[in-house]
Image (tube, rainbow, N blue to C red; front, side, top):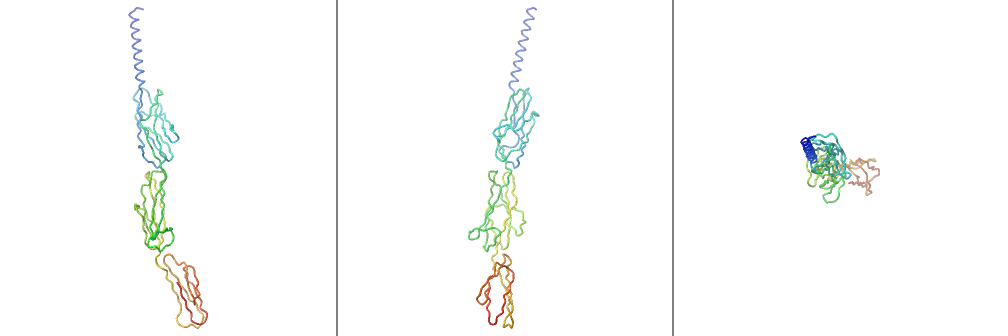
Length: 292
């Protein structure tokens, strides 16, 4: 072998070695950029099943081998991995989270076993429970009122209170008032609801929260009766020549008659209920009958 050929071979060897080093160096600068697309950061969700969308972009010669979803629901850990990744395209994970506030992020691995993380971790908030609204009431003298009981108060004031626990927070309370318990709540609650109509009124209400959970409609009855009952009798006038009955008829169009007190010749008794009843007069003489 002549010296010229030997020198050429040495030069070619060194050129190939340098090119290999350059190629290795270029591949050593591998990178995968991971963008989180959805859900938005700090957004509330009223369902536990969440679609996590991300876009991985590999700008080197190594392919993306896998990507994994990480959350801190049970400590910062891998909760799902996919090996079917499309470069520079939105990919996704479908995963269910329990109620609470969590972090999530994406890690991808290339074919050279290098790991890359999303540029951010996002916060996701899950609230799948509807709020609970309670009602309380007071009479015009500020004493407590029990719903569905009769009162002769001038009015009843109702206060509505919404509680969403540790969830997203109450958004709005809607209510309506009617006499047949069928209206659809459509008035935004902002202060006490005053009911003054005689008879039976119904306050119907519900609330929703910031995550979009909607409570079922609640209903409370308010019963007001400010008029006294009326009582009638059929007592005859003048003298009677035989024993007879006097019929007492109590009436009340709203709350009903609890009892009627009647006194015959100073002897008093109570008769319960709204039904008419008879008082027998069987002895001679003058008789005095009073009732209320």
